[in-house]
Length: 95
Image (cartoon, rainbow, N blue to C red):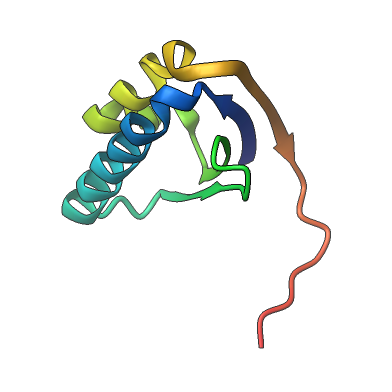
């Protein structure tokens, strides 16, 4: 399952959000879950975040302490709440 989320941060929450994303990536580097792929992008405006999660079973995400902390506090950091969609990949190019 691939899930794409997009949200807009409050201006004063940008640094905290970046630290929380870094903490999740540190945890992923330690745990190395083979059932997860997570990409996070900050758009040019500096406050819009796009997150792409590939996971077979989303309930497995609860096993990740930092990921849980990141998602549980998301509403507080957001100017606009996340919009989340399950997406289907129609094509891919990688040389």
